[in-house]
Length: 187
Image (cartoon, rainbow, N blue to C red):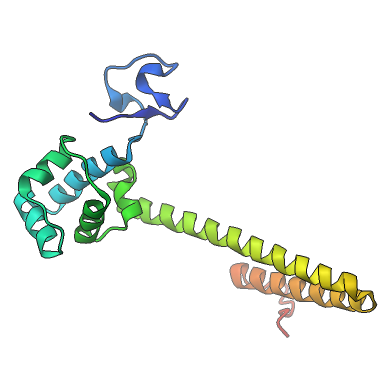
């Protein structure tokens, strides 16, 4: 059984403030259960390739993941749970990341959307790691300068100028040179 949530309140459809609906498609919900997502996604991917459950089973077996056609059918129809090794096998056979395989099937139908979502999340994580690295570096510099106040002013000027230069170069790389042909800060 597929479990949907309603994005208006992130509860099950029966608890939705808009009332109980007979047609789950009326809501713009996505599957709540990772296993449910995988089951639907496996069927979507298999059918998109024109494969039978037997063909998919054979491909899984060739890749080193033992599975018979009836197990594929039972997984697709929610009659059998899928373990992590099997999920990895399905992802490998379909050429998907595991994160993509367990994502909402509606988005998965738009593979490019999943790729872009993954890229956005990865970029966000990178910015968070960079922010942590910058904070640690700045804290280490501040600690050092607290012990060496005689160089604090010169060091602060160097850091400020270097950061301003990097920010300017980033803006020029991103948006091009400013109007009026002002010189690049890289010089």
